[in-house]
Length: 119
Image 1 (cartoon, rainbow, N blue to C red):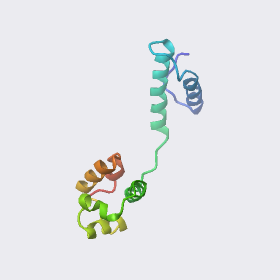
Image 2: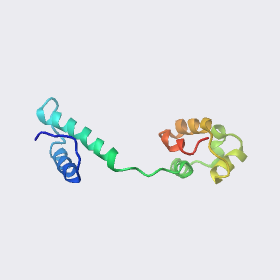
Image 3: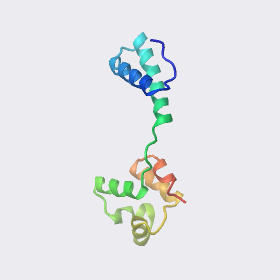
Image 4: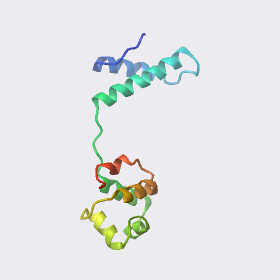
């Protein structure tokens, strides 16, 4: 099939089904080329039609702390004093760009998580 820009949900569904059919195509084959094209077309459609919800930076930080078994005191080298950490985690103080950069590196999460919260 000659694929074109996906404009309708029907086009999207057909492309998704075909992508799954040829997902394990061998490299350097016509199916492999078709798969590469379908991935681009599906990604383009997704970006145009589906918006991911914004994540709350504090919830992400708390989740990562729980996941890693961290306590508030463990963030002091990253954020600052015990009071600063407490104020950040309670939402009483905004995350600065400098803090966002350090948290991004420490937790290995995308910077986008902090962009709408950092000042």
